[in-house]
Image (cartoon, rainbow, N blue to C red; front, top):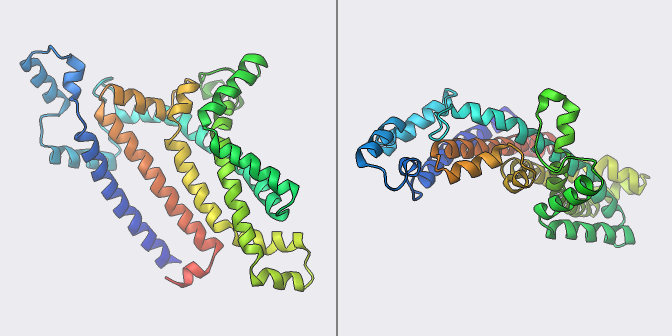
Length: 315
């Protein structure tokens, strides 16, 4: 297990190094100069040069890259060009919205998908299976921002059970903050639950046809007992992959939902920073999101080894 973990950790470090280089190069070569954007098109060359020097844009890109990476390793993400505040403070304030939202949506999608996928697999070809698969097909086809608008129309405008947007903060209480994130979390969770339910069903159907499942039933276990004792655990590996990818998507891909609900999260901060050409903020947030994706995949790999001991024996 130790050798398996060390190999995955080495892969993680290499992926982070490559990702940081790609992010820096892609963002830095994008058209537009932050100093020119801030001062306008009619700025004097001397003023423009002074601002570029103040922002550190006049140093070689290689030097800026290593300064950026070394700063992140020490917890210093730099200073925003636009707001002149530490980037880490901007990110930490927004992270307490985006991270709970992603976790909330992931829990909701799992609570919906696991029972739906198991129910459909246990009733293959029957009316229950067809109904669940029809609902998941609808969930995959409909974009999450459409679900968001329907939820606002029904539960915020008509029923007035929730606010239509905004986030009042966690200082007013945990349940108050969770209540404010409920509609956005549901809008994010529904399409992901549809995908996860289909994967859960397919994985279970593959496992149910294996020889060890027939052996378990031949020894006297009922269909339900064989499913819960032997089938479910062996069907979890592809499901864990999807859950890991979903969390990364929910954390990094909620820009539209945060715009619909006016949530002050990382998604809106990225959108605003791109519009203002605040490169240091964009680079830092994207790197943070990439780190979360790679770290989640690392944890999923470790979960594989726990669920399937054969992976440990191969390393």
